[in-house]
Image 1 (cartoon, rainbow, N blue to C red):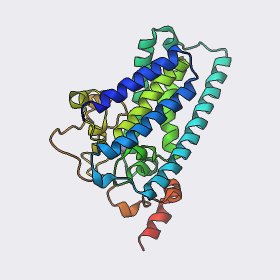
Image 2: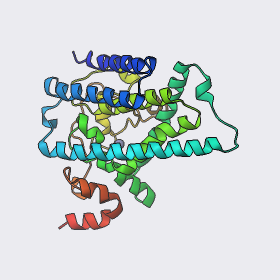
Image 3: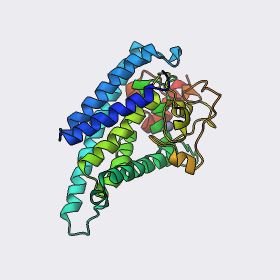
Length: 295
Ligand SMILES: [Zn+2]
């Protein structure tokens, strides 16, 4: 069963996305329906085919997860709206227009869009993990992204635990370059759906195995290592595909070794898992915060 769950999810996404496009449905509504349906199934599967029982969700987790879902949705929509306004402004200027992605066949436009939409978040994610103590900018971005790594368990809903700045950069990195290249609504829909669903699946506390597909796709087998407390294991920075991790030597897949503990090193230097407000403020006031926690 563990090898069937991932293909079933993928087939459902592909079929439902195709139906939305073929029947000319509202893609925003389609996106919300597909992601909600899959989320409900995934949360149920986390109870039936659980990967680790010590990663079960508590009431406190759900409360913070819901706050993050609301915050992510708000920031994502604002960022997308601003991008559309900016693209419309560029289109109104008397400049040579880039429309590569609207001129090639749909399947190539999606493939190219997915690859480009994967590349910039990969670079951003890798930079966030650099944590260069000699650079204020580097440490700021690590603190922004560290919010995602504070939980000491990995499950479907904690995929949403992202600082608003993280959401903004990820949305920009995934969609803005392909919008500039002339991607239409259908391409944006497919790229966004694939990237979002892989973010979800990567965190699922379901006993999903991808087998040989782990060399192509970034599922939970690989993404759990990314959440490891051990820095040498915390690789696999991609979202959907392993391509850039393999190309830039950040691919980590020790087949016979499960991830041991996840979270951040020195958790006392970070806000607690259930402190939403402190996590949001953490990148800006970390010195004050760390000084307070030391007592
Ligand atoms: Zn990360």
